[in-house]
Amino acid sequence: MIKQVLILLAVFYLLALLQTSFFVDFRIWGVVPNFILISALLINVFEKPQKNTGMLAGFIGGFFLDIFSSNPIGFYALILLALSFLIKIIFRKYVWLPAS
Amino acid sequence: MRFFFKKGKILVLIVGIIIVLSLNFFQKEVKGFFYVFSAPIQITFGAAGDKVSGFFEAIGNLSELKTANDELQKVIQEMLAEKASFAELKKENETLREALQVGLQKDFQLAFVTVVGKDIGQESILINRGAGDGLLVGMPVVTQQKILVGRIGEVLENFSRVVLISNKESAFDAKVSGTETTGVARGQGNSKIEFDLVPQDKVLKVDDLVVSSSLGGIYPEGLLAGLVKKVSRNDVSPFYQSEIAPLFDIQDSNAVFVILNFNND
Image 1 (cartoon, helix red, strand yellow):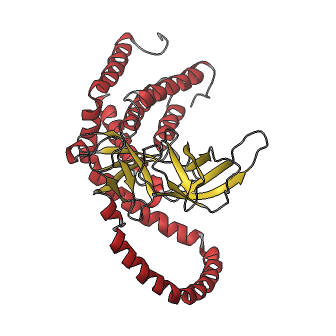
Image 2 (cartoon, rainbow over the protein chains, first blue to last red; image 1 turned 90 degrees about the vertical axis):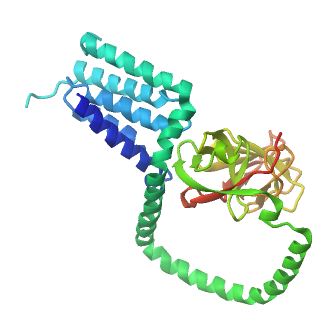
Image 3 (cartoon, one colour; image 1 turned 180 degrees about the vertical axis):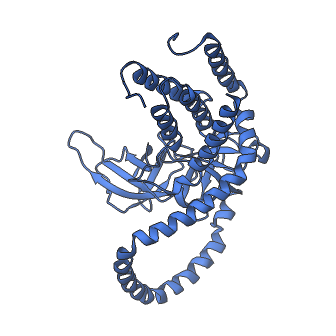
């Protein structure tokens, strides 16, 4: 669990740095994709529905988005946590995946 | 919730949320702490992004480059013809500048700052100077070409956040350069600025240069804001509906100036 948290912290910190410096120069139709949001959502979608890493990823990713934006700390963290939670509910209750 | 987590995990989650939210009591210190060791990395990444995007842009525009090159050749020829007359005007201008002392550095006391981070979504940039360097909320930020960037919205000890003129929170009095056509430039987000409250009895055209006005006391007079991009009339409203394309480009900005001695109280 601690190892997981440390990896997510490192990955999302790096992504937040890239999001506010490197990726700014790569606009797609005038918009810079939010790679933290995309990564957090992808983790939630592709991990096993029983696991909670995606929610942790959403929370940590949101925290770093808050740090590098003018929002109060916790704004994006709670939004991404809630989004992750929603995805979990949908996947656990309404999506049946074939057993591998 | 009991389908999802064990009690222990719920507790950890709640404690985590409380800790993160309580960081807001020390928001400036926490953000400042992260910015201090992130700034050098962000500057390096930013410079790399500039180079890489420039490379890909050049490849993607190869076919357009030839057309642009032909057009530029024509422009160069026209400009060469104009150059002779400009040389004379330049001499005259320099003499007048010296006489009137209207250079940027003569007009204002400036602080040179480096752009550390850019937040495109919120139309703001992070600069590497803060309260410790004498920066205050509301100070105008410009480029070396006297192009208006925005104003300082938040000051930390060693860093400040600049709210760009295209930010939705930004609104200032502006006018068309060299005329009495005045209005209010309101940020619309996504690098767009609305030029509002321009009466229809005034003349407003596409490509008119819009500069800041000292009327509202937010910015000094004459800073370049942008070019009028769209103008339309509406019979219902007494004002034009117009849009300005800002001259400042968030992507190409790596260093800007803060005007220290402008009193906007």
